[in-house]
Length: 160
Ligand code: DQA
Image (cartoon, rainbow, N blue to C red; front, side):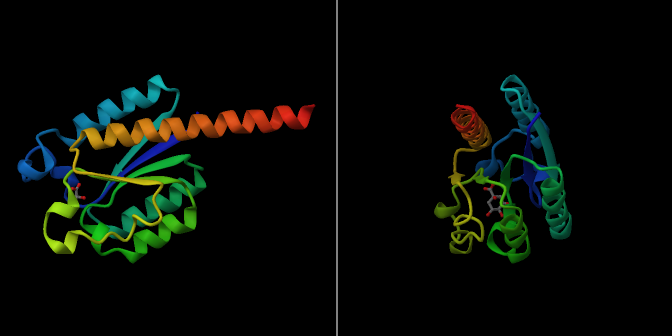
């Protein structure tokens, strides 16, 4: 079963209580449970990982390469604006990913407007709260299903 990884950066373990005007009232566990349900229904395995440490996130990205994860949903949190190391890890894996932010990073302090990930991402969702993860997952599933269909089509052509 193909794997979709949900990777969350620092302080996102505090979702639910952390600055709810920006980040809403859902906990990370609630968000992840709903994502796992949606992924399973579509026939995908969902793995989740959150860390406050940059090197742990980098290592988890390396691991996803070894495990051949099919897609990553990434909220790098504050590392969005600082981490060349995490950017380089994602570039090295070449695993397609969508960048998700609960808050609208363009409507806040100017230092949040720059992301080290957006130009590498398949897409970026920012400002739609927890729903952003669900929309990103729907897009990832559609992307993977299209990829499978195209592969099947190519194999059919080769067989004829
Ligand atoms: C965030 C936005 C970042 O600027 C911030 O540092 C976060 C969360 C978001 O989901 O809106 O920790 O990525």
